[in-house]
Amino acid sequence: MKTVKLVILSIFFILAGIILWFGFYYNIEFYGKQYAQSIPAVIAGMSSTEIVMDQRTLDILETEDVLYRCYTTEDPNHIPLYLCVIFSENNRKVAHPPELCLSGGGSQVLEKVQINFPSTVEEDFDAQRLIVNHGQTKWMYLYWYKAGKFYSSHYLLQQFFAAVTQLVQRKSSCSLIRLSTPIPDSETAPYTESQERLVSFAQEVIPLTAEKLP
Image 1 (spheres, rainbow, N blue to C red):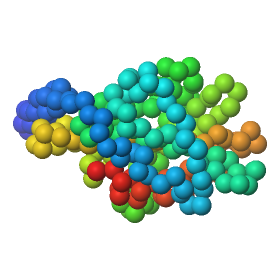
Image 2 (image 1 turned 120 degrees about the vertical axis):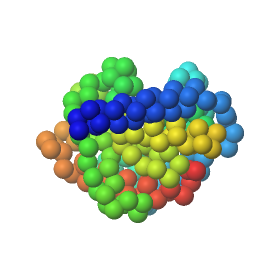
Image 3 (image 1 turned 120 degrees about the horizontal axis):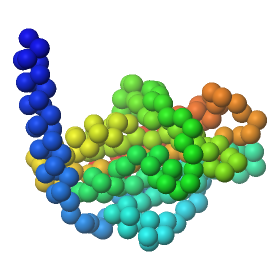
């Protein structure tokens, strides 16, 4: 019985490897329609300001379809919420784990956990939550991936699904959706208020990405 299971697992991993290998290298550069920018500048009564990414960063991301905004209200006590969307119609390498870039940029990732909450696209939506040190300030991040209509916070699962779609349809849209907010100095672990703030924002953002990102 163990031998049969071993054979089945071996076949699965071989097939998965073939799909990931060929899917990974079937990439086409495309700088056409800006889908990410079609997400509204006003969300849940919050207006936004654009944060411009430099060309070197866009070259590293291998796409120019990028949105990076700060959403806030006129209330001086309102804690800003940041939305970053990195999208490509046919290059799944744009969707990468944010903690790699954060660590590479000199920030310290203190914690990474998966959280689940209800959304309009999935009753039990999963996202990865990061606690990050930016100098003297702690930040909280939520992120997940979207490949076509498929959502997941797991990098390898999203990459596998995108590769299969890419092989079958010869195209595969991929995106990384990342939310963030600074954690007030007065707030202590487990940072419930910051998480509630980000989850509430995520519940507004998810249906917009479902509508605007193919």
